[in-house]
Amino acid sequence: MIAFVRGPVAAVFVDSAVIEVGGVGIQVLCTPAALAELTLGEQAFLATSMVVREDSLTLFGFADYDERSVFELLQTASGVGPKLAQAMLAVHGADELRRAVTTEDLITLCRVPGIGRKGAQRIVLELKDRIGGPTGSATGRAAAAQPQPDGWQQQVRAGLLGLGWSAREAEAAIDNVAAMAAETGSDGGSMDTSKLLRAALRSLSKA
Image (tube, rainbow, N blue to C red; front, side, top):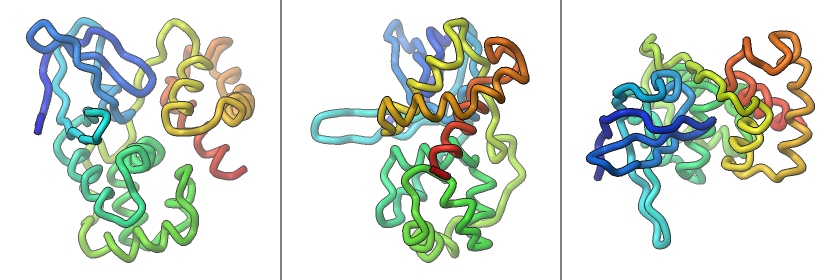
C-alpha cells in the first residue's frame, strides 16, 4: 500500500493531480480539499489510498490522514465503492458527512449523485456508530482548488464524466450553474472550479 506521496506538483486538474516522485509522474485522484493545498511547481504532500482492481491500480489522494480514513470507512458500507466515496467527500467534506451520518440527515446524504433514500438509510445504519462526530478540521470543510486557465466549463465537464455522469447530463449541469459563474466573473475566474463542480453535482442530484 502507498500511504502517501511527496514531491513537486507537475499538473493539477479538476479531480486529480500529477505528483513527481523520484522522476516519475504519479497521477492521484484527489478530493477538492486535497487539490486546494496544491500549487503547480511546489512541494506537496498527499495522504493516499490505493484501490486495486484486476485491470487497474488507482491512487486516491487526500489533504490528510483524517480525510483518508473517512474515505476508507465509507467503503465499508454496502454499495459504496471508491468512486462514490470520493463523490461524497467532493460534495460535502469529511466533517459534514460525519454530521449527516450521526444525525441521520438523509436529505444531505441524498444530495450526492448515486445515493438514494434507501442507500442513505443503509449508510446511516452501518456507519452511525463508527464514523464519529465532526472534528472541526480544515479538511472537514471542503476546500477549493483554483481554476485552470482553460475554462471552468471544461474542468467541470471532466469532473462529472469522471464521476460517471453522461456527456448529456454534464452539459445540462453546466448550463444550470452558468449563472452562478457569470455572477462572479465572465469566465468563472472569481469563483473556484470545485465550488462550481459541487453546484453542478447538486443540480444533478435534484433532477
